[in-house]
Length: 340
Image 1 (cartoon, one colour):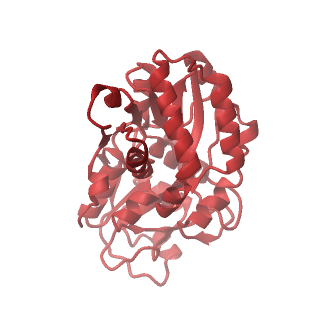
Image 2: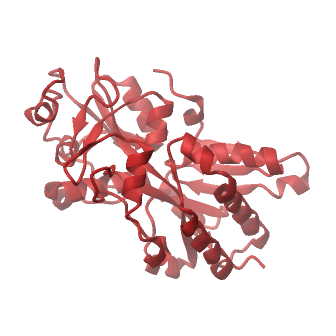
Image 3: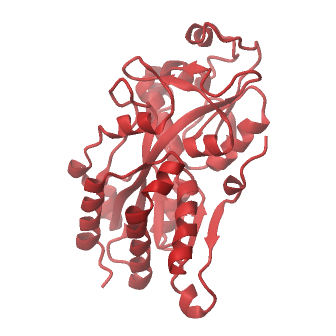
């Protein structure tokens, strides 16, 4: 299966117009691969409109946090939000930029997108190594009308520090006590089984190229690369498809206004229509930046994305932040980021 060219690139490098003055306006960031498709699309449109470029290293949330802490980039990006006390300790400001869904993806001959159904406990048992073949009784119980092969499951997971992994393992911890006790939730865990791949694009590529594989990726990666996704049984016991409507149903439970540092985890939310592995992706910047000009340019880009980027986000099946939350975020910029 051919992997989409936008996923194969690990870096958005949309440089500004020639000349030192224009190059000085380039915005530097690093981190989460989850939002790479939409940041790429926004960056392209922003450059066409303003002439200013974005250099974003799509290297994983863990590495993005390290880079902003080391002050080698103007902003970091993470799908694993930092708690308020950690933000205060590191003098960082955090806000959500966009939301989306994480989906299990499989490569099983004859199985089409949405035909396979999984629940949290079964998914956890696959990643625990307890369910080893596709025709296991637990999978067959969920899929009585589907013919599944008696072949070994190749488990694919992230090898790098990943916010996508944090949200995926957070969901597994909520769905499976055994997973919570033995593995837990974090951006990097001691995986019981599996083959490691770097980034959402790495997992997508590995699953696409490996028969009988399973992995987990942000939905835009599954859709753009025509991967076979599974439907899920959610917290309410209902079968749901990974759609913008299902992601929105889960995201509607977030109380952003009363969350210090906008800290919200959106996995395993209630509601008949909620997709169980929904997540937000966050931006990290210094409240008192060393380079105030670069910080101001980054805020201009994010402000533009909130003002003009919703339709582009929806086209890639991301969920834009509600306007009420955007208003709160703009107030946060004004009060907490000292660019003057």
